[in-house]
Length: 331
Image (cartoon, rainbow, N blue to C red; front, top):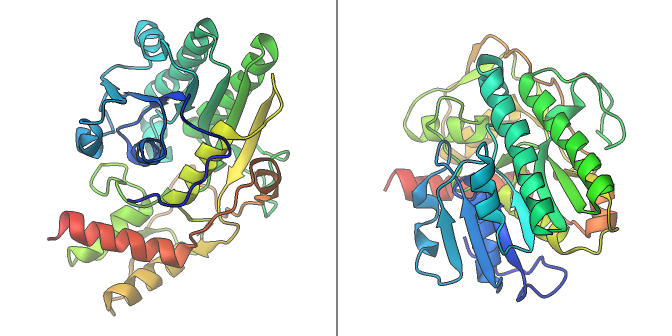
């Protein structure tokens, strides 16, 4: 992708940024933006358990770029990764609600233990600005729409618990050690470099890949569950603005990162079928355990404090992603 539009709110030429999970979907898109816009140094730490070296191959020749194959569950790796850095974008995690229900201990080890390791290494290195990936899953069983940051319910999965724990640790580290920490509650991010083939692939890449392959995807439940689907460029914008905005010092803030519109999974299937000129009806299966039924974000806090302004809506994002998938997987 070519991130020609600038999102940063200050000069990046003195920024030395660590991106954890930088070989993953969102992380590699953020790496691309930061290198395109003049960051002084960029280091990625990734254990390649869910990320891919192919996502970083175009950056290897850049002298500002460094890849460290390490694991955030290892405190020593986190210390090495943080050495000499000024900012951290923490994207590393074990995603997926179904995976967390199958592997709760692993989810906790990576998402909670790994995050605490990064926070501790950042504290020891004197890094004051950390932006991390939280999730809309923290809203749990809170039924009110749209979702506002101050009103959360009971988590419905180990994954949601792990992201809520991240927010609690962010609060404590900010207040205890004078760090400025921002958590971004992602709402169903999708786009180029998202893996469609893993066991826990997200719905948009999974549907897109299957339909391009001539298969019929299975919709979980009745398909009336709704999501605030958010194109990855909007998530990149939010991360860059959270890294560069004049946020209050020694504070922890969380922000909804979405578009502020919702579509059902049935809407998603219908739109993809239209774009692909397919008239085959969808198949339906059982509902997934632990899923939130409806999701829609109030993004006014991010708009106010980060100058966040999502540029790419659901329909345009689907078109761009479909173009990428065709070129990458089916040429």
